[in-house]
Structures are given as C-alpha cells and as structure tokens.
Length: 316
Image (cartoon, rainbow, N blue to C red; front, top):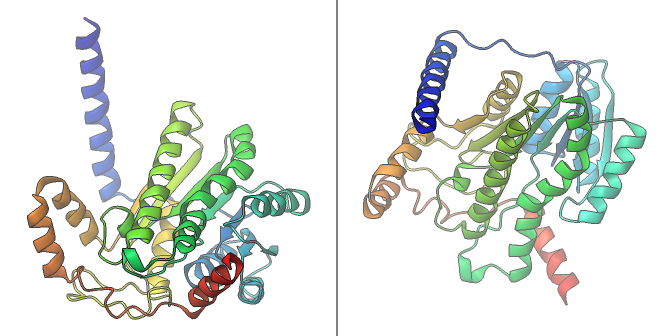
C-alpha cells in the first residue's frame, strides 16, 4: 500500500511541476530585487567577475570583491562605484589557500556584515595535455576551481541558513558536464564544482531552507582571455561566447532563481544526446563540432603563465 501511495504522490508532484515549468516557459518568472543585498564575487578582478559586479552595482547591490590580482580588483572596485550609490569593498584573497579564505571571510563579516549572495567565479586553466600538466598545477586547479567553493560556502552559508535567505552561485562549465580533449584537469575540477553545488542545493532543499537559492552555470568557452586561442568549428552551433552576453544571462538567471543555466542553448541538446548515444557516436559528434581540436591553438591568459611560474618557483 505504501508503494502505491508513494507512486501516486510522486506522479502527482511530477505532473504539477511539469505543468509549472511549462507555464514559466510561457510566462517568465518575476525578477527579485537585489538592491541592498551583499554580493561577494570571487575572481572579480577581470572577465565575467568584473561584468557581474557591474550588473549588481547597477541594481543597487553592495559588493565584496575578491581576487588574487589586487590591481585588477581595485579597477573593478572603481568601475562599480561609478555605476551607482553602492558600497564596494575590495579584498586581495588567494582562494586556493584555505586559511586565507577563512581569514579574509572573518574580515568581511567584521567590516561589511553577512554575505547574502555568494558567487564562486574564480578559475584557472592550464590548457595542457594530461601528461604535460605539472603536478602542482593539477593541485592548484582543483584548489581554485573546486575546493575553494567548500571554504567560501563554509564561511558564509551559516549566516544564510540562520536567516533562511541567500543565494549560492557556482560558475562551472560545459566542460563540467562533458569531458573535453586537452582539458583533463579543468574538466575534472568543473565536474567537481558542479557536483558540489548540485549536492548542496539538494541538501538545503531537504532541510527546508528553500529561501536559499542556488544557480549553477555551465557556459562554453567565454572570450575573456582565459581561453585565448581556442577555436570553434561551427559558431552557429557552439559559439565562443561574448563576455557581456554571458554576464547578462547569469545575472538574469540569479534574479529569476534559475537553478541550471547552460550556454549556448545547444548545450542542452548535446547533453541530452550524451545520455542516449553510444561512446563512438559521441566521439563522432565531438569531431563534427570540432571539440576534439578546439584547444590545439590555445594560448591562455598571461596571468595563468605567471601563476604557473610562481608555483614552480615555490616548489623548488
């Protein structure tokens, strides 16, 4: 009898949520007001992090900017203050260093207050084939791209839980859903970031902290310099994404409390195909789209080279 009742309840919920999702496809959700919210963005010194800061500042949110590049972070701070009458705080923080994350988090709570929107955006990429990646850069990639999310969430989530109010944003990647040739370390870290964010979303739902929202973002390569030199075979299907386009989409997804955001839309179809076709068919699709060669001309951002050089020097 319990199985029958459980099945009936499940089918009822499933149908209700299906119809609800259809309605929201036709009638977009209302957007929440973020004015007065305190938004912490890691990797705010350039690229997507900087553009997200501009969007939030324009909508009256107070900003806490973290980046290991203090010069770039201060520039973001200056630009954000020009967008409106908002408070902006810039902190130098190496997100790969757990003790530093906790130390700077304590400083933020003391000087700014509780963070209500946390955007884990900081990331690095080596762009090397598996056997050419130095061990310390594998570790660094995991620390920055995935493990730092544990530290930032541990630092700021407790206050969100007490208030039952907040928003966690994970900037993962399409490479966190599908393995990509030449990105073994990066894909692994983004799979980890996606898994952590999704698991935490479910955990918060189970303890009925439903006013703490989650948004998990999986874009294809963004033209931020981080993936400088990457190519795409068919831009209409799998384009290299413009920074402002991604920032606008991410910002709107946060305002609409959207849980998953994949960019471009073709990624939804490709991910669905991955689940139903054979591995050989998947490889053939990847070759057709040029995913197998997209990293061949990768050069990356100069800061990444500097980071690698610094890590190598410390290891000696």
